[in-house]
Length: 240
Length: 240
DNA sequence: CGGTTCATTGATTAACCTCAACGACCGTGG
DNA sequence: CCACGGTCGTTGAGGTTAATCAATGAACCG
Image 1 (cartoon, each protein chain N blue to C red):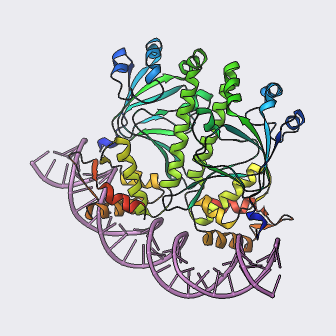
Image 2: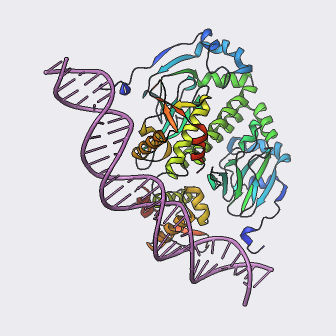
Image 3: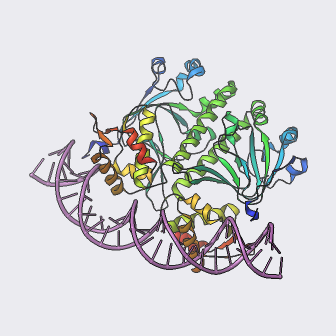
């Protein structure tokens, strides 16, 4: 194992505790937030906290889907492959978002899910959610709402990240990542991953980010994996 | 009105009858098919049959969403706009598919829906479906399954129709359209629409389709709006 | 016939892909 | 400890693809 980023460690899995829920960074959003806070305490027996290191896969396309995941922190890519066999990232999941909702329809996972950064998730058996839906119809609305969020994200990929020049796409990606973190800086994926996200080659992704750095639109931060954004400047680039 | 394709006629709307349901071309698939056939007879009072001509809009992005639609026949495009202001088609709906499921989450419509061909739909009040979910939990699975189908379609647009060369994308689009019609021919959209579907310009779409016709990979049919496909040949083009 | 839409095609330019080389970094093992 | 091998990022040269600008032709309708 010559490089730590390639280490595929075994998942760390442990039962969830009440404290996990009360401290959950995804408390304010997502499936079990708000009015469903109280119900978690009844269900928590089935919950598991899963930690994943960068490059580690949570599940694979076609796997039998028994669990829904709720992201506590970190960033996860949902991957498919193009007809040419290249990796294509079709979605990114951030804090509070749900993954693997297809488990609720008894279908296999529709993507391969891979951690981009250090990540923690709450693993919920699909059956627990299905039972919950039966006992509380309002929970159905919550689940459907999560699916709508996922559809919205898919449309955003099509309209914002798959059209325009490479410069525009990179700028929109960075702005989008920063916005979801709520600040003026963001995680900067590997060039290969930027390419898979935007439908461009690794080289083009590299050239564009290098140019953005040289023109001062993105700058270094303490963490070498993260960049500071000139939001107004990038917004100008993003719209052409 | 210089050209009939630009005519925006008033929608034809009429109450649905039991005969509509028994003859429904979407009988075998979709929300109310199969085991839910019988239940339709109780709910049919709220159903309306809507007919739409080409270029006619069913609903617009941001409109209050009170209805879910089930497509009886025809082809409908779901449209958004890119940051540059260009039209971007993010999905196509064909026979038996549901549109406007966001109505079930009380959210406004997330797209503008426009008929590409002569079209008939069944318009179902969202409230009817929500009531149905309450009285029969199995119906919830059906609705979630429809949303998963929509997500699958979104991923297909990202992996198949937004990557590769213009030739590959056009070939994949035609094969995809033919497959959903179950034959070796398909509807051929206007060049502008092909461009909006594939993220290329109208001129490129025109050049590619003209070349495909010259090389015999697509041929004329009785209907000038439809083309016959050389499926093996196009499959070769599609994979590069 | 005149006006409009749509499709086609050409010429030119701009953007991106491909192939290739190189340097920085890092963990490993001699 | 330092050389080695690996990954990742960067950059260059050259070729290909597609966008852009522009003009023309076919079909249709009033």
